[in-house]
Image (cartoon, one colour):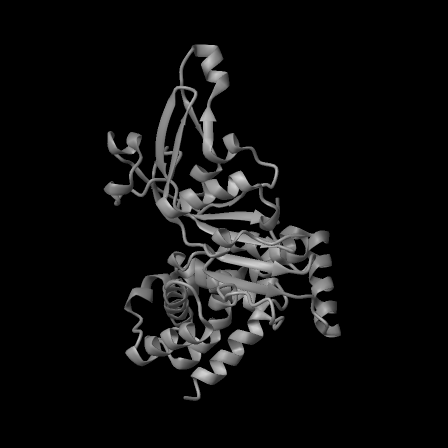
Length: 336
């Protein structure tokens, strides 16, 4: 199936920035894109795969174990000589109607019936390890799957004990979700697990809408030719992501910038310390993507709405948009 090129997406700059920052620094915690239907949320998320650097894995391992991380190996890889290979980083879809067995894995019934052997068939969480797990309409996800994802996201492990099986394997992934808030709210526990939150709206610029339609039409008429036309720009952006990943650990976060991040979170009354941590990681990622060696105040201000808009306490007497509240707090904090 042909995927629309990421670099050919018109507009939606905040969403593209958030996805790129998560690709550079997975510790940010992923991206939640909420907004109108038909605005390219799913298109942008699925297009991200072409920009991700290859990962080194243990050949033949269904969990894509990293050969150089012995503490995180599955039971099979820990007991054998490891042969390395490079593969594309996975971007896995979790459908709304997926069963728990499909998500976590289950007994391979065909093998059990044919050979009488108990063998574990890995699920979507195993496929997403060291990559991205994408949930469209995440606000409509069944509660029992939400609980399951929260457990795995917190531990980095998937544990399956059923039907005589006892399996434990690594499951660390970047969670990416999209949805229309008019169709239902996310549970607070799941909302808090997303590092960045983007408000995606329909464009009201005539020229921009025309260009979106032109490009989409060209892609649908000849996907291969359209993708080839954008291949050079895709390769250039992918190179920037790879370089940013390589240098992000050396990006300096000055104390005065960190102090402003803490002050901003305190001003907004954000619960816990995830706000500060996400601000720090996102600012470093944006600086690395721009080829900068230090995080500036401007960089911190630019990532604040993405990192904090979904962490604000709801005031039933205040119907002000969360993004506006963050921008107002930024104006107050950065003039003092």
